[in-house]
Image 1: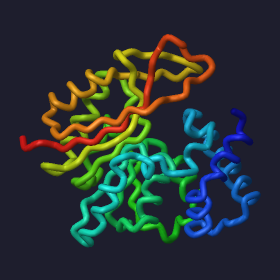
Image 2 (image 1 turned 120 degrees about the horizontal axis):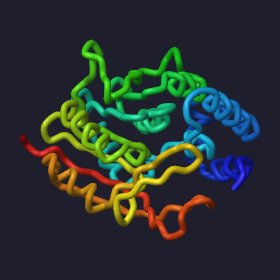
Image 3 (image 1 turned 180 degrees about the vertical axis):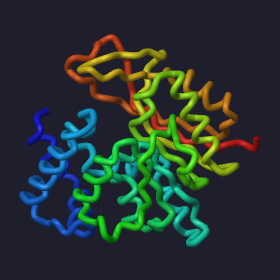
Length: 258
């Protein structure tokens, strides 16, 4: 699928067009496509050209299509008591902005991203640098500095992120999440898994596909409970091993009392 087909595919989604019309102020389809193309070019100037960037996945929220989204969105009903939501690896902040657009209080949303360039491109994509109430923090969660102020979150979300980490890094990630999640808080996300844990390197990028059972074992070992999985099919890239079975795994769990 070429880039033109991808952008046309995103335009077929009415909710995407409505979001950009109401939040960004672009309701002309040709102008919207040119805007997306400009931001994609900007994103590719610094940092790895991930598939989600190359194929314009950054233009719409993938969080909003997951099984746990409505439960997350319903937490807005708590008003000032709505839990802090932290998005690790937030890239352009698309998921957080969609959550805010759907009614979640923006001052309760925090995006953590390693690459400041992605955050800046997010401001350009959504044209909201001056008025966006979401807090974005540029930080490497594996080498976080002591003076960085991080909130304790009621919900921590990781989207299309865990398969970028090795098995050892996954344990470090879980430890970070436990440190920054309130007792009883929710950890949710979506990433690529395989039948058995394996790593592959393609086009200079290494992905680590943890097996579903291994992932569940990691969560249970760190005292996460009420674990829910939802496995969805995933389209393979042309140069992928046809014998490797991979899937999108959406998950939700709760941090048990420690």
